[in-house]
Amino acid sequence: IFLFLEYKPVGKIGEGTFSEVLKTLNLRDGKYYACKRMKQHFESMEQVNNLGEVQALRRLNLHPNILMLHEVVFDKKAGSLSLICELMDMNIYELIKGRRKPLPEKKIKNYMYQLCNSLDYIHRNGIFHRDVKPENIFIKQNTLKLGDFGSCRSIYSKQPHTEYISTRWYRAPECILTNGYYSYKIDMWSAGCVFYELTSFQPLFPGSDELDQISKIHDIIGTPANKTLNKFKQSRIVSFDFPFKKGKGIPPLVHNLSPKGFSLLHAMIKYDPDERISACQALQHPYFQEFW
Image (cartoon, rainbow, N blue to C red):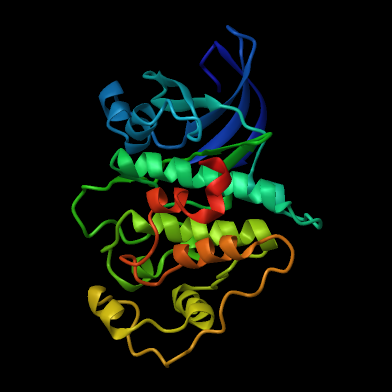
């Protein structure tokens, strides 16, 4: 039952493991919002306020490329929590799903600039997202906003982080190959995968399991140098005796990626996180020159 009398559900947008998202009408202001209703039971407002997602959204709330949190609705009696956020038109996954006609490069560039802008902002504020993927990036007309901070962590929190995070296809090598020794640069890897998908409508590394994921990464960018592997703390799941692969390179994108765009994409999917471009550096990349 929907106990928040000020909000009337008008339809379901989606469902995840931990929450369902409804389109709701706010009866006070007559506007529509997205309501993320948590499946977990909450005992107190203190528990709600300690939720990482709530803390992150409050801290990041006034940026044009971050999904805006309108209010937190906690029903103590029912133990239910809902996050009321602004309603966007669609996510990137919905934008490209089943689409035939390539997106104009101008649009891709505009979206990628806004995505890098959102990542620069959260990283400067000491937060990394850990689940950047097409489903968590929302658009409304020409505006892009990063949402769903349910997996985010503080950049300063102690490693190892929780091992299993993010959707496999968008997971950086250091996430797969170490037991939680990774940092904010994983968001840039994921953003690079999204960049490729925006241009080709195909996932760049669609692995069927962790081993296949690493294998698909090696097929394209080659096996890493020993100095890179030595930085990774040995993992339980994957042995580091990889058969050498040169890597056949990123499949050429005929239509809609200029050489500068290709250069940025390469910088985002560097195997070694220390060599991978940061969001702040990405904004300064010549690909985005027209936005300076």
